[in-house]
Amino acid sequence: MLLRLVVVVVAAFVLAIGVYLVTGTGTEDAPETSYVGTYRSALLPAASSPGRIIMLEVKQDGTFIMKTDFQNGEPVIQQEGQWVTDAGAMVVTISTTNGNLLFRPVRFSLVMEGSVIKTVGSPELFGSEGITLTKSGP
Image (cartoon, one colour):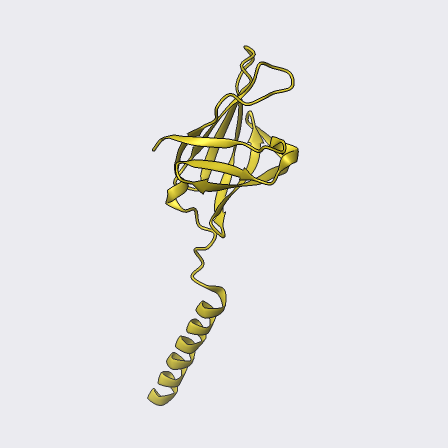
């Protein structure tokens, strides 16, 4: 009976090691703390206003708030959602705009270069130049 128990425990251990080696640690999509902080853009072009400023607050818990001010006296647009890291890039998924749930969440990626983060791809969202946000706070 004791021998059977030892065999079962060893088999479970070997299986656990195999699962770990195949799937990894499970932290690849966990938010990296290096992205946590507050970022702000310079004045960016906008079609129907003098320009826009984007502020992105990236939180430790994997959520974010992005505010876009079109500098036109209208209320700031606030978007919220979740973020994860994938292959070193921050993948942002916007799920609400001004408190309203989006039918189709919007997803885009940013990469860190020193104290700035830059969009990768997504010209349909940010134009061919993309956007660059500079870290302005913890």
